[in-house]
Image (cartoon, rainbow, N blue to C red; front, side, top):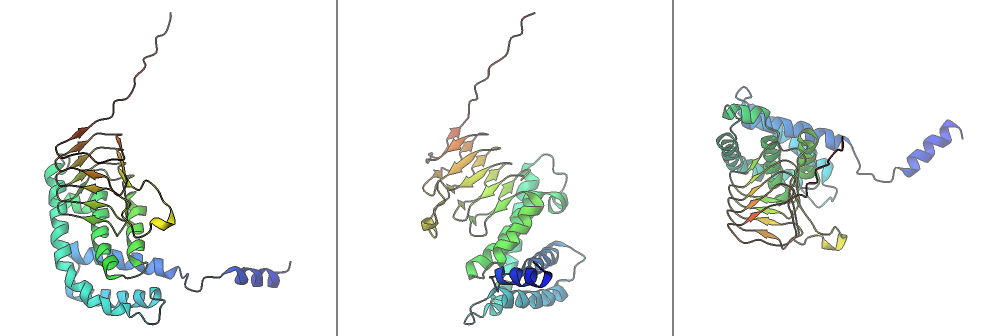
Length: 262
C-alpha cells in the first residue's frame, strides 16, 4: 500500500467530526487560569475575568455541537456563581488546615494539598455540569484526576467543609451525595454496584451524611446505600448496605504468623 492509499484509509476511519483534541487543551488552560484568578494574590481579577470569558466562549463554540444550543451565553450565569464557589472552597481549605496536624498553614493547603486541588476543580466544574455544558466539566475533573490521582465526577453533590486527606486513589461517582463536614482518606471508593448503561440518570452511588469519617481504602457501593451521620468507616471496609447514624464499621483481617523451625 502506497502512502496515498494509507492516508486515504486513515482519513476514512476518522469518523468523529467533533473529536477535536484542542478542546482538551483549551479546557486545561481555562481551568488553570480560573484557579489562579480565584486564589493567586498576584493574578489581577478584573483582567483575568475578561480573558476567561473569551476562553469560555471559544470552548462553548467547540463543544456545543447542536446548532440550537447557545452555550456561550452561560458565562454570565457561571460568573455569578464564582463568589459563592470561592467562599465554599475557603471553608474546605480551613477544614483541611484545622483537621490535619501536618498542615502548617492554610497557604500550604492551597499550594500543596492534592485533595484541596481536586475539590476545587470539582466545585468549579459542578456548576457547569448543572448548567448542562457538554464535555467541559468532565475534562476539568479529568485534569485534576491526572494531576492528583483523585477522580471526582462533576455530577456528584458535595456539601461544605469537605476534607480529602492524601487524596491518591479516591473515586467519587456521578450520583454520590456527600453532606457537610465529611472526611475521607486515600483509596476510598464511593461507587456503583453495577455499571449497566440502562442505569444512566439513576442514583447509583452512595449517600454520606454529615460528620462522617471514611478511612483509607474503604469501598462503599450502591445508590441506596446511606452512611448515617457521625459514623466512622474503618480502613479496607466493604459496604453495600446502609448503616445507621453513630455507627463504627471495622474490617478485621486474619493474621497468620509463620513459625520457623530451627
